[in-house]
Amino acid sequence: MSVKAKTREIAIEPGTTGVFLGYKSAGVSANDKRYRSTIKSYPEGKKDDWSGLYVAEDRLTAEGYLPDALPPDGTGEAYINLIYIETSTVNKFAGKGKKTHFVDIAGNEIADPEIPQSEKSKLVREALSEIGIKIPDDKPLIQSLGLQGFIYRGPHTASEEEIIIPFHFINGIRAISLANFQTFKFRDHMPVGSPVLNPALGIRNPDASMRSNAALPLAP
Image 1 (cartoon, rainbow, N blue to C red):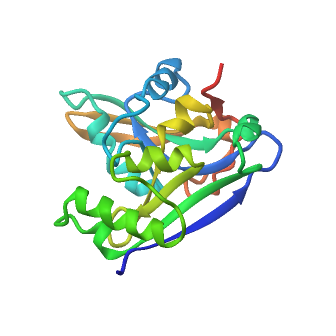
Image 2 (tube, helix red, strand yellow):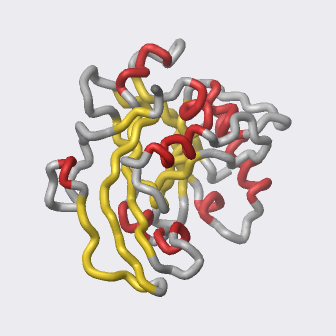
């Protein structure tokens, strides 16, 4: 089997920065309480194997989804927000210590659009079983990983990786924080002007390392 799984850990250091996970396009800025409420409203316990909050590791990948965030007439603002592990929640990672735990999946089959999602789920379960992580066939894949303390990372395309955050990390242990990154303007589905970086981040280069003191926790 060419699909393989391994686990990886990133230590969560005390402080205000958190662990950067990736970029998420949206029609609402992370600075808007409505967006944080929307993320918290993601339904826990959906039965779909692949349900979760999808985050792009690459900024340009997230930018490609901006048109989906626009109103039907294609005129308005869209945003790229930054997604972090919230440092104040580290003590809620039961049994895992102050670390973020990932399951990394590799295999061309997972990025192949011709292979059904149900078959991909089966391949991932088999790969996880090889490293001692058991996910019953009747339990949703991503949510079961989250309940065991893992975040999923795997192929999005042949050249891009994506992260899927289980809902348990969002409205269970409230382990996610956000920051607005860039604001884009569109008219008739066409970009207008240049994207504007959030000045609160204190950066001028959109390709800079994303460690932010401006992240907003989901937890009240």
